[in-house]
Image (tube, rainbow over all chains, first blue to last red; front, side, top):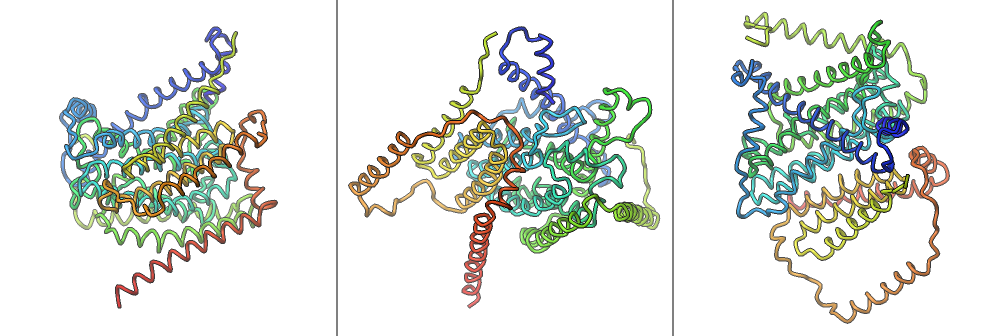
Length: 399
Length: 172
């Protein structure tokens, strides 16, 4: 997308006589800066604020509400505070690797945004290996975490780093296998290609494509939660056992980057799930807006963002309500349950695609009904228990 | 308009990163630094694959080598104590035989580089390679593909057997 845009600008003579490669370089730098400063940093920052407010509400607390109206500027204040703080490097730490670790982590995280499809036009590069590229790049984050854990020269950090590696290497397998169930259906790895084969209605999403992709969605969700070091799988930084895991010795701006990646990863995880299973940016056609290209793209961007942010809030909810698993439980979940189910799913999807190459309409509609039925039953149970316990509910987020 | 291409610059940059990191792997005293240098070498190689328009190979290189093998290496290093002062265990071979080996292997390699007629082709257009690779694996090269899977399966079973044995001894 970026390349076509730059080519059209070159053809119009905007850049004068600059060589093509230099123009590409400038374009890439500009697009990178736009995505990082305009989107990634803000989303990660605001997410920290939203997460703290959501937890507070779930745990009957107030949460940060002093900086700006309803505390909306808290994330900026935190960021500025951390940037101004003194950076302590422990005497016994390996200073070079200690400084290197945040860079590796941040590169692995931001590189994933290259193939992130925000709308049908808004994508930096629609790589034909999109989803594989994103999973490969996020694996750099593990290396950074392990370097951080080792370089800190601290027991807690080291154990945190080892746990992170064991966890992420294990959960990569069911995650990849479940992602491949979607690849089997689409026959393409390109993020845009995957989204274009879905529709705006839930019955056209890949989560409801077959029973196997339906199960695959949940396996992918659990595995990505574990890969993102989120509760209930946040063992690498288990506060109750390891102080703060691999970030124990970090302070100031380096600490900021680790937490930027952690919260930004929430968005990346959701965006991957939305792209693969929940229809991506496919927005319902609205008569007037969808006619113009700009209006359609704004609509698609909003659809994608709202769907992904719904996933982010879901993960906050899980974090606020579930206890942490033990290490052995973590490994049992992965190797004894998720992995066999993922293999079964993979074979099942292959058979399904063989038998119904065009998809099976009846199954899709039935699964959609079942899915929304389960959701409705869940809401009914929650409402029932809230009524039974006589809980006082204030729905306004401002109170 | 002069057409300056960044292609050679990027190539030499990537080549330099790869070679320097590879030297770092070999000459670093600290094994953790070696592992981190290995990451540089692997990423540089992936970059070179991209320049050869082998995009699938490049991504798989990062996915398997950096995401899998390097992480396992770091995992093993993190579990090892006292990696700073390594006592080299195989001193028994001595200098002369190793120089001899180096001479032999070096001669063969230099001869191969200089004398092996290089098959030069124009840089291919970047196009999806994944379909070609997939079709190749399941049609023309199915026997090597299946053999490789068999070897991997054997390694997997071997690993399970090794770890099971340990468990039995602990109980006994």
